[in-house]
Length: 510
Image (cartoon, rainbow, N blue to C red; front, side, top):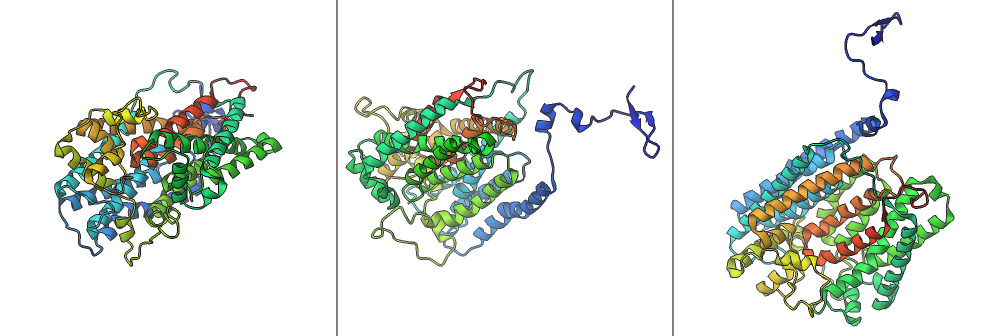
């Protein structure tokens, strides 16, 4: 019979209930997943509470009470509800005990691009892209975004309560194959070298995005003629270099043996220099550089809850304060026109956050007689690499299609994933699509939380892929999907190249 020790006498006393096992007697799986609450964790949570209140209530209210010419109609109130809902969900991501990279990225995007920025536009009565339809279409767009967010949450709850079974989740993890990683490094340098030479040398990458576009045109691949060609050129020039850098970074972070290897360190330094050229913030869109930054951040700090919370918290500040002014290198000195304003809200109304407005324009486009397209746009995104010479009726991306219908001069417009799903499949299809996204994000986050631990091997593939997807999700959510498909396909090719299930020492990173 199990006994306890009587306090004060040290004598064995009969047990009066179940006796908890000592830590040393717990199985390794229980130790691995048991929550550990340290004073630092408690402190970080205490500091996050005021921020959570600020995201949910204070920030929306401060924006709502600013002076402006916007009407306080139904669209305004639905937008306020959406902003507060997104703030509450983002707060939940910050305060959670587990790192939920994919769900956290989703709610960070919704809060900044579909919440606070459109609320500022509603208050001021100004938008970055003209809304051509009636005000009712704007109300419908905001309501559909809110419905999609609720559907995403429902999908995450379904994943949370998914029934388990024996052996479920104990599959052999995918790893990075060491020799194939060497091959990826060679491919990365070769593809980036072709990209650099095509555009006229490294100096072009430190001038402006306008020079990059001109260099692509001079290379005979203009956006109007070949979106697929441009996507492949830029994708192969940037994606393999980034994935190779992430793999080597994780190798160095998690392996003491790698940190003592001059060869590994030298290759990492060369990859870092290469990425400084092809993936710098000067020559790349801000959303792509955000992908690079977040992927590196979560790869360098794979198990830091404090870094995860800090990234989400500071992401709000960067998105709403820094991002609107971060297009300094989009144009050269002659074509750059900074926003001159004394209002803290006006940059949000005049810059990039046109997602709600473009969703409303997409609804107006459908109401004008085009109807839903029943998968045509999605097929164009999946089959982006098929040349128009073979597929003459290949659709343009949704942002370009709606922009041309509007008569916009600049058709490089966003098309958020809500609009992409809605134009193809209607409200029900959009809701089911967001529900599936929430389910998949929650499942991957749970697996990442189990696998991305201090005991994980240096070549753990999920610890490499999830930070990359979390960063790139901003581009996927913003849209259009056709523009984002090229880099997704190239990333899948690179990951398939280095992936292995072999556990022997000859294949795995040491």
